[in-house]
Image 1: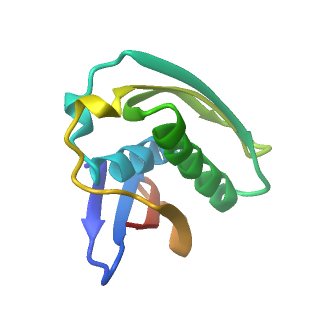
Image 2: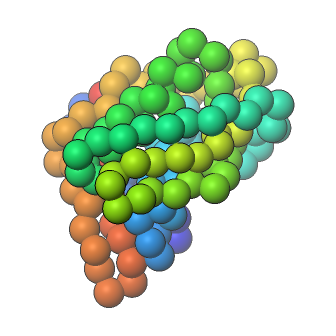
Length: 136
């Protein structure tokens, strides 16, 4: 399982899984975009490189998901896939995000922002689990 949705009173909350931190970040991004629509049906017509650096995993996750929302708003990128995501020990992140023009899809709603509320990144015996709440 890549991710699951959790109950939340007003916003959307999900838990993403990964065998390592890189895969958990990828699955967090897919979980966030699947709130809007099924990412498995999205064609790949756009590729954008992302490079970020922060002071810890939580701030890196926040910046990464906010950057994806920024690309949704400014580049009309509806995410389909993330390639070569690599998080280094200095909390820098590099990847290529792929997707299509969001105007081609019927979205189920809107995501206003990522929040630090209930954010959790933890190592488990199976890998990593990430919990995120987004303001919808």
